[in-house]
Image 1 (cartoon, helix red, strand yellow):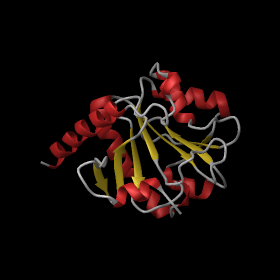
Image 2: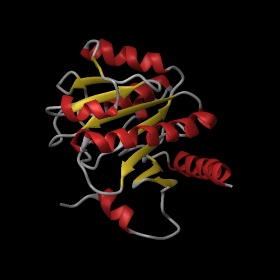
Image 3: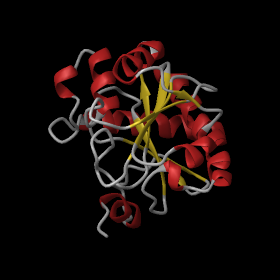
Length: 205
């Protein structure tokens, strides 16, 4: 199976987007970085979705991704955590089958939740990431508007592709530029990587 992320992670050089590695997971600015600070947190090893991981791995990953969220929030403000859990690129799921958790700074996390709930209902409250493994039976959407809050929806035709990007781009006033394919926001990618590398270097100094 060809995976652009696996190929990217296997390459070396000065052009790497990787900001930091934490326990086999990588933080990097996303292509389509419509808001400075918008990153993906991804496993180095290929897995389709977070729900495919063993619950024990998800228990370990949750504090790691919260560390990433805290670092991003320290510079860029409130940050939501989201995933489109992919299953064969069905509607509502992402079209990249390498697990990627979105970390997106937003003006108002509750506004993101409100849009999700207006589209798909209240959603199922989870105790944490580990619940994904036993809850998801197909493609899904996961949203954590803030630490300690976890919501889940089965993906269906109510949720458009790149749904979280559409919602958050709207909140940032760039609704027509949600699609990463046509709007890479290369400057924001570089800015995000440079700033967050500095943040992590300060933390380890």
